[in-house]
Every structure is written in C-alpha cells, then in structure tokens.
Length: 346
Image (tube, one colour):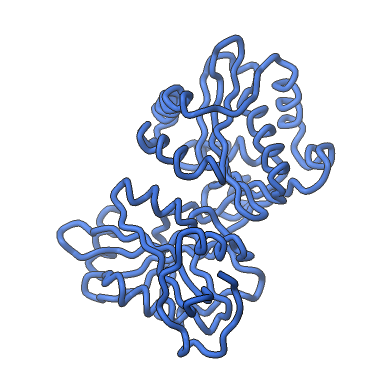
C-alpha cells in the first residue's frame, strides 16, 4: 500500500490492512516505533491483551491508524483501549476521526494513549480531542537516547571516563560477545529471573521471551550474549525499526563482575544497531524527573528506575521525555471509578 494524502478526514473509510501493509506504513513514519508493529500486537495477544489495528484510508492507501491493545478492567468495569507509542496520521486533521473510530470500535471505557515523541511544534492538540494528561504511564515516559551516527571514538568521547574505561576493559577481557539462538532462551530467562530477584523488579516468563524471539527477533531484533570461559555473564534483547534501536530487556550475573560484561554487551548492541542503519540507541527508561533532579538524586536512591540510571547516565546520551500518557474518558463514570482506584493504590 502506498502512503499519500487524501483531501478531507470525512472521506476516510475504515480499512483492514494486511499485517505487512500495516508494518510498511508504520516503518515509513518519522515516529516509527517497535510497539506499533503487528508483531507486537501478536505478542501481547498471547498474554492477556486483545490486539487490533484500527486504520483509516481507502482500499489502496492507509492514511491514519493505530495498533490498539484492549484489556478488561477489574470488577467488571469494561475495558481499556491502550495505544503504545503511536497513533499515526498523514495529516493532523485525521487524528480526531481516528480516535473517534477507536472509541467506537473497541467500546472501551477509556482510551489510554502514549503517543511517544513528536517533532518540535508538531504535537496535535490532544486536549481538544477529549484527552487529559495522565500521571499513570505504562511505558517509561523518560529515557536516555544515544546518537550513534558518528565514528566510535566520537561516540566514546561523549561518555564519562568510567564508562569508557569499563567498555575497553570488557572488550579486552576475553569475553565472547555473540548473537544467541532460541536454544539460549532458557539460560537468558534464568538470568533475567536472578537479576529481577536481586534488584526487586518483576520479569516476564520464559514463554514470553520465547514468543518475543519467535515474533520479533527474526526481523527486528537480536539476543546478544556475553560469555566468558563458558559462564553467561550478561544477555540483552535489542530491537530496531527505522532510525532507532531500543534496549528493552537485559540481565547480568554477579559472577566475574570485574570483567564489566554489561558494558561490553551494550557496546556490542550499539554496533549491531549501527549495522542496521540506526542513528539512535534508546536505553529505554529512567526516572521521570528532569536532568537536574536525576543528577541530584541518583546516588541516594535505588528504587524503581533509579537503580539503572547510574549505569545509563554515563553513556553520553541525551535525557529525553516523550509526550507522556493521555486518557480519553469514553464512559465518564467508569473512568472516574478507575481514577479513584488508582488514588487508593497510591
């Protein structure tokens, strides 16, 4: 399907593009994101979500659309329609029609939209479309993004001295950095579980990572492993689409920590991303505070994403915030009950 403009939002029709056509449409967007691909919807459909592509256009052309994930709310309060890192339109005038269609077709009590990044001055007026900014996010609102377009020495010069030193030491320590296969998923999952227990965060099941590997890695990602004399020291899953690569899942062992495998494997991932033609490497998630607050607080805190900020801050990237989370109440009474439940939970 080609992507071109049509004259008015009123002339748009609801269409059902094939997965390959939808993915080409997503990949052509300046804000292209992995979490809007059909494979991400297929993944989430296996783990409690109802995924659907809501697209508008003609029989030949997609003009606007979103991958929408629906989930039942507790206590029989209907369902939430969630749009992760997306919602696209060839013309901003098409957005109101898109969100009206999502509301009508999902029958959701409310829409939670996390649109990701917009170019400066290009963000649509979501408030005029019935959305209100929400403090409850699903994806991290703030991250650190590294520009990897230049040569390796230039990239390293932006890092702090400690990070550069640890990368270089890891690359000279005899660690083997390579791509894993599906046979490595059990070891990866065990290492993830150990890392989660050590750092007090939840991790996905081995079945989840098996589905990630099956649905996303063949085309959009890689499982990278760091081994030393048969010991698995670190493992990460990285993904790429368009100009951006994302580090979404990672684990490490305490064993042989003096070899700094976690640094060498991130450097390996950046090289993989550069070979894919990416310009940006997204470290995916730091506490949602401005840079001054992050720098003032990271030594004293280790809860939540604070525990990884100390590691991520040294890579010479830029702290960036997405457009945040926005809710559109389709059923005001149910949405009010949802907000009250959130308040009770703190």
